[in-house]
Amino acid sequence: MKKVVVAAFVTLLCLNTFTALAEDKKALLARVETMTAEQKEARFKELELRVDEIKSMDRSSLSRAERSQLRKELKGMNTEAKALEGRGVYLSIGAIIIIILLLILIL
Image (tube, rainbow, N blue to C red; front, side):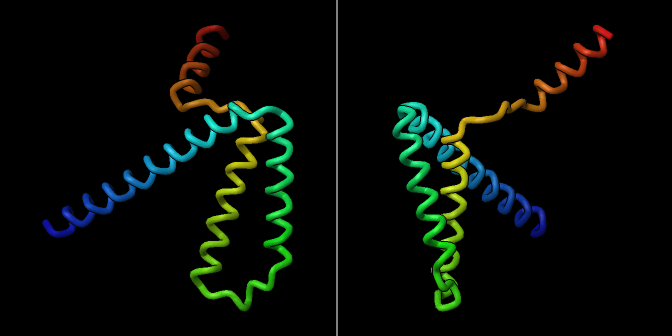
């Protein structure tokens, strides 16, 4: 019984973090959609400069918490850069299944 309760608790915690990440991405995408092309290009340059600055840092002198914070910052900048590019087509699993079924029916 104890294992079931622990497993349910861990599952609820995981679902909560996934929801928070999805909300952050939605807010980021909404902010990027309102930007003009010049603003996107300027923000992309800012991100590139910050990444170069982090790469040139001496990270061996940083504490564990500071390195973790840098990693989180880099991951956030990576997702923002991907949103700024706006490339790619995203398909859900349901859409892929429907496409496959239509291809089977047609062919």
